[in-house]
Length: 39
Image (cartoon, rainbow, N blue to C red; front, side):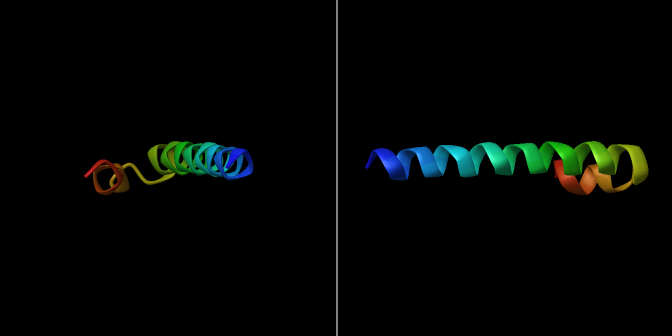
């Protein structure tokens, strides 16, 4: 159970970082796509 919890926690953290990076990149390079990301 402990391993599963740690694994899911790491995966969620990685996913959140990837989403943040993608959102920043979209805001900088493709402003029009920000509405698609937020919506």
